Image 1: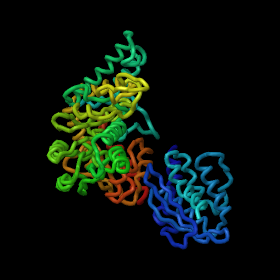
Image 2 (image 1 turned 45 degrees about the horizontal axis):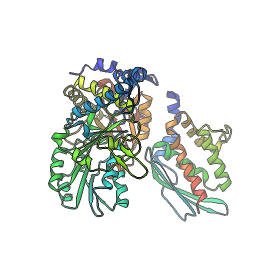
Image 3 (image 1 turned 60 degrees about the vertical axis):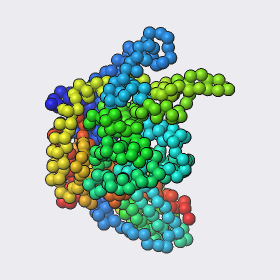
Image 4 (image 1 turned 90 degrees about the vertical axis):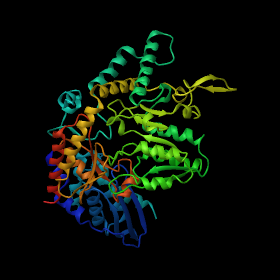
Length: 147
Length: 406
């Protein structure tokens, strides 16, 4: 881990998502909800999804936490609006496997629409922070299993 | 006077370099680094002197038993306990509290009895008592704290009017650094007919403790916060109280006679030391106590209080930084927040400058809630810290402020 890695992780886009997060504030109806937290550091997120005919019509969140966790949930909600459940699940799996270096599909996030999300994957150089970046996505997985 | 350079030479880990910076270890409240004297004692014991204790007829075993029991005597002197049989070895403060809660739960408490805790307690001095709410039907009452992190003693006085059987309070807060007026609080508890347990986990490394002067009924601390190895700790109890406590863990060593018809158990402290003990860890703890005693608390306190004053003054120069915990009686721990920058991000940047601080809820979630936050950053001092350690932290903090608010 070097200075370059730190700057990659805390890029301006991440800082901006942290300062002005997208879709903050639960706005129903919520067909699927879940709550997640990182007990070690105090990051906390609540998700509300409105899913109709297999499509995520709306997604919003509430919560507090470090810049990485807030940027991650903000970027996630921005990306998932309008996506199918299948696409959301695949994106969640791809992002988490890249961050945790667990059979990562290195080309999964190269499409232009995933540029901001791809920036977040530099968290893989900061093992203590991976859970901050993946918290929103674990919570999404729980929400998609709920009803 | 502490010769800080000589002391730092005793801690080889301080020579390590992280991200191009020498290690500035400001997390002693989490766990203390160990001096060579402790490391070598542990190694030597395993090399030349190891055997199980209280079990052998041969010389090596007798030697090991004597070395282990000598540490019990050492601890008796260290905290000025009246007798060595009032010193129980445990795996740490958490186990000490669990032992006490479990044994008191089976003997002292009845449904409706009250236990007084405080808002600043560590989870290890909250959750074991909470287990007794459902098991025994006790009620927990909580002393509030003022914004500066000091206990509201008038509120404590009012709580003592209830059906209180036990008060359980930290000697020194691991988040706020507050040093509580234990002696005064013990006297008030005894007047109300309640026993008093002190969580001394943070305090023992930074100030002399005299359990007879405090007149507390129980006192617990951990080796690893006292520059000793992990895996060992102490529970002190007034002997007449320990005699009436049932055992916690049972099995070998704590029995007199075992048969399927009837088993009899030993007197304290062996009653509470079931199975093979953390022998070498206790030997290491003895070496840690020797080390601290050779420097002396007078010199340690002078060094640490001057460093705390310097550190707090430097921290307050960082824009938008607030120190949390500003009680008049405070030691060695500085929790702080920086507006709009999460502690986890602060700690990552600090790490990048070679500085080890802690970020999170510090096993004190009720305390975090009381201050309306989910996490705090915390820098804490040990006897090996110096001005350069603080300067390195402050450089890191200025750098993170510039990064987030250019």
